[in-house]
Length: 461
Ligand SMILES: Nc1ncnc2c1ncn2[C@@H]1O[C@H](COP(=O)(O)OP(=O)(O)OP(=O)(O)O)[C@@H](O)[C@H]1O
Image (cartoon, rainbow, N blue to C red; front, side, top):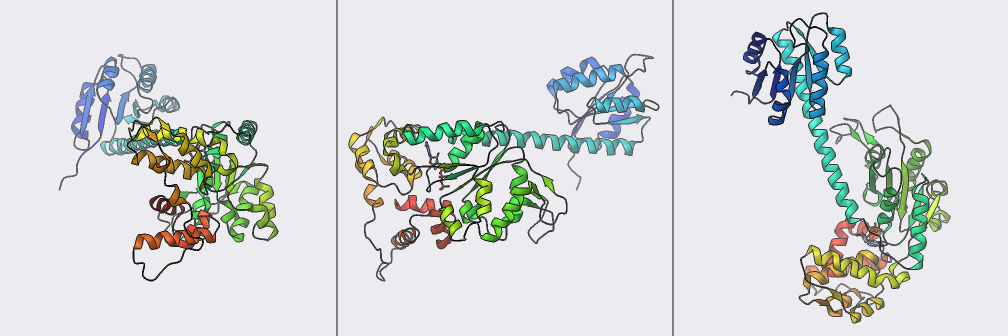
């Protein structure tokens, strides 16, 4: 079976014999080989074709050997396509000139007269460079798109209550500093939203914001996830991988659910935060890391310190600035604002002509305790928007009854064989056991937090 040829090469040289010979040889290896003896045609050609490698002579005018023309055309090419891969053709003795050209942005050079094998090897290496540059470009664009999408999702922090106003003022003050921030608050109160807002308003805004849910990382994978690993350092380490600390280098690292870390892992984390250096699992070399650290938890960290379940020295490292987010129950006055904000968002998303939430529905919302806080309100509005056919949302569009605990101590009965009902009862029971703590409930149920959220949503809990 013949190998499929790929790659587009352009050769620009004033020597027609050289052009023909090179084309004859190279077209056996590349999908397209174009030749051109007049460099003035380069801009036009680059507009028509996306060449992987351009092989460029350095002198075009008869008896001129200065190489100036080569530099000039190299510069032009890189202006048109900054990621172009240009290999220069130079005569013996011009090596100094070629080195200078590489400094000016050329990828490599070949000496005239060349050996075909050497030319081929140089072009293959140049092609690989082009592919890598293309991949990096694609990844950059993808990364920007993902960030734009996430930033859009986290773009607005709604709240007029005095407690939220104080939080906004704190964000303004701390964002510009590099101080470590600890955000405390129940599930769904907006801890990640605040962390992203701090990053977005900081000098690190154009660098990565890397979020790690420590509650969902297993003890065995902790080091490899956070610090990275070298290929072969353990069975599943199929290739070298950077950890989250390295990925966040220059930017912000958000460690969510820090209260869930076991004592041994707290010690490991403390060492890295203190030294600001990480070494990948299986590697000897350490890398300096420059991160802004934001941590969050819904656990009572200070009580845990008293009970020796959380290291005091670690708390002191992470809590330079502390932000305590209120539960939704503590800022009922923000409910109409938040509910209308979500209404607008979901009416648009699901193309529904719903303009309002009725006063009676808003009054009913004030009576609800919102154990899942803003996330619960957001889901409640989303569900109502999907299910309603009217232009104004009414109390019955919200699943308030289902949300109120129906029985104090839900029991599983042996004659209940409906799997959905059993699942619902079980989730309620476990949630009750952990006072609504999603992370702990999910861990007991053997679920990730997001799959527990999906089930809460499904059962209207
Ligand atoms: N003040 C707010 N304005 C608008 N949306 C908010 C606000 N607070 C939270 N949300 C939304 O509520 C949802 C939950 O917020 P977020 O994930 O930041 O909470 P969290 O406290 O980090 O939750 P968890 O403890 O479960 O990780 C998100 O979709 C977020 O956009």
